[in-house]
Length: 280
Image 1 (cartoon, rainbow, N blue to C red):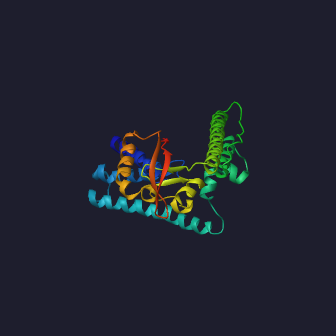
Image 2 (tube, rainbow, N blue to C red):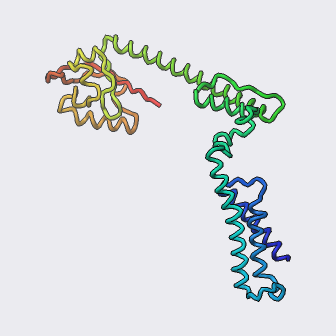
C-alpha cells in the first residue's frame, strides 16, 4: 500500500508538470489525480499484489495484460466517446471561446465586465499602436494596478521630456546649419570642404567661379585630382593621410600662396587658408 500510494503521488506530480508544459487546461487536476494515478493503481495490483488472493489463476505478466486492457477500455469509453460527442456538438454550439477571449477573460467577453488591469493594458496598447505618449493613463487609487499606472505615467512624463529636448536640439541644429549654409553660399571667398579621404563635400558658388567646376559635378569627387596640379598631387595626398592620422599639419591655419589647376586645364595662383573642423 505504501509503494502504491507513493507511486500514485509521483505519477500525479509528473503528469501535472507535463500538462502545464503542454499548456493543457485541467483546472481541477482530474487527469493527474483520477486518470493517471488510477491507471497506476490498477497496474500496481499486478506488479505488487499477492497472486494467491486474485483467484484468477494468472501469473503476474498475464494479470498485468488484463489490468492494462481494462485501463485502456475505460479510457476509450470515457474519453473517446465523450470527445466524439462533444466534438460533434461543438459544430453547432461552441463549447469554448477563442484564444483572444480566453486572454481577456470570460467576465469581459461574455458579460462586458472589465477590470482595472484590463483597462490599463488597453490604454497602454493604444499608446503602443498610436505612438501618442503625451496622454497619461487613468490611475485607480489605492490599488496595485493604480501603483503600476502611476509609475507608467512617470515614465511617460520622462519620455515626453526627452522627446521635447531632442526636438528642440534638432531644431537648433537645423537653424544653425541653415545659417552656416547661407554664409557659405553668399561668401565672397571660395569655400571648399573635404572629408578625411579628400573627397569634396562643400563647394560654394564663389569656388565654382574660381576653379570652373560646377557644384553638381565636383561634389563627391577627389579634390586632389580636381584642382591640384599633377606635380603636387603626391605631396598633397601624403599630407592628407598624415593629417588624418595625427590631426596635425604644418600648413594649418596659415594663409598660403599656391598654384591651383583650373577645370579648363590651366594653372593659376591662389591664396588659401586651411582650417580643420573636427566633428563628433
